[in-house]
Length: 302
Ligand code: XIL
Image 1 (cartoon, rainbow, N blue to C red):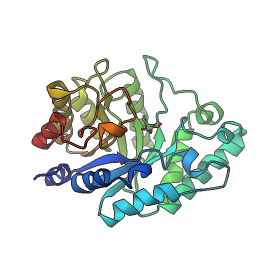
Image 2: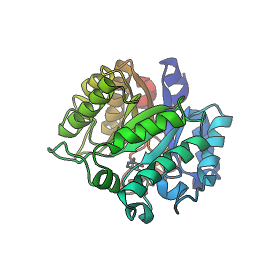
Image 3: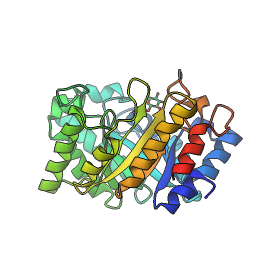
Image 4: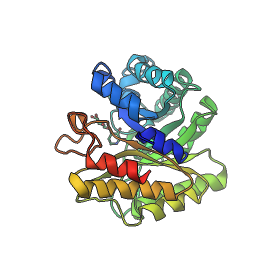
């Protein structure tokens, strides 16, 4: 097949990209999106600060534009994200524990109700664990005021809000076997043992020379899949250029294809022109929307 989306579909997977609403008026951005990709993730438009900037006051207009674009073209939508310490409006951190619990559940209920039936998978909780060797939870208003149970509570609320959406835990630096991924693994194992609803784990997969594609990437995806969840590559980008970057992308695609429950790959943007990693060139299309060696490597591997 001649496009990323068609080639991935031939392997039973989707191939997605993060999309930013402010570029949907740029013709080559939209034509590349519509030609190559079969799934989208709103890059910022579904985050808490975007959809509920003030308590109880919801604004879905930016995210709605992305969802309707995707729906009209038959693309999947990954919802990103419901409960995260970052891009969180200040009012959330100022709440008492009992108000925070109410606000968290209300946020999940309102956002998921608005998009009910339209979302393939939701990142219910994003980045709840610390980096490094501790395997500990990260400090956040949710962790600090509600304790370890906040993740379970968020997933239970999410399941009731839209039973058709797959519910994911999503994080970075969990791509290989390490203390952080071990902690997430233990949580997922515990959830499955106790019947806490979870369907998938997202591996962000932001790579660079200091943090390359781990040698045990496939093995790590497989051990999570073996717990009975889908795995997804959710925010892939690889800094660098040329053949070394292309080789990294091939490794990621090959790892996903080797894991039956790896259901799809999402790159974190279409073009280097708009990558969040402004110092780099981590994506598949250059700033003129030309296909890079990394693009060819992905298409060949699929
Ligand atoms: C990034 C966006 O790409 C940027 O535009 C924004 O300024 C900051 O957030 N992990 C995530 C994503 O889960 O939501 C982040 O996206 C990148 C890291």
